[in-house]
Image (tube, rainbow, N blue to C red; front, side):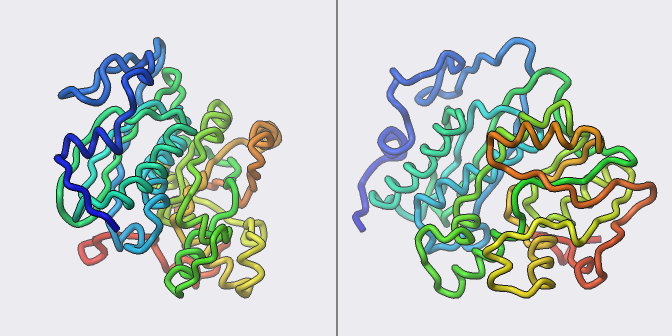
Length: 323
């Protein structure tokens, strides 16, 4: 692969900036100045989140660069989806071990393609030298007072999940075994997760709380329960089980991956039972199932899950200092 001799600013101009003619009306000043200047929509609030992706922690070093670009943006956009926000702008801090022309072009294409499809404009960032690390800050908008939050779950609410959790961890296992089948649904689920932005917007006004499943379904459900001061009862037989998982694992292994796998970036929501049909109707045009898997109850903790699945607490970067 060819290495390119470019300054930081030439690298940004060649791979990460868009032509001035492509500027949007909501971006008053974009790439190329000390700061971006934005024009938020009247009557809306801003939702802002940041995610960092580190080589061989969040993605394999030998993953396709286009997938790395896609994934680094997708995991950040997923936080906007969980709040019901519409993606508008993003910034990227890119740390590279070297400026490799072929790698950069593919990385930028993967990042840009998802950004364009999501309506998210790259408005600035930074490029430095070091171990491959991608920091992405996303900015979204939503009507004032309509943010979906973790703390809104109510006693008696259904607990429901979009899509099919568990596929991403199975995809990672395949990659680690050396499998590289292009387009395999489990590999795609890990390498190119789909942020559920449209689903988050559609569920505003129906969902009482929401969170994206990044650390594992049970782990992220615990965040909702802690914020809402309630407990949960899960129907283990109601879990949505993806066909590729059922074809390769026994039932208990599939349930373990669904409950504790993580990296799925599906949405876990709570909502009144009377609103389930409407929520499913809103997601139908997205071809995205919404499956009820339990209820919110008084008390604390999670009932209905075999103890062998409850022992894990999800992903933690610093387990040695957990209290």
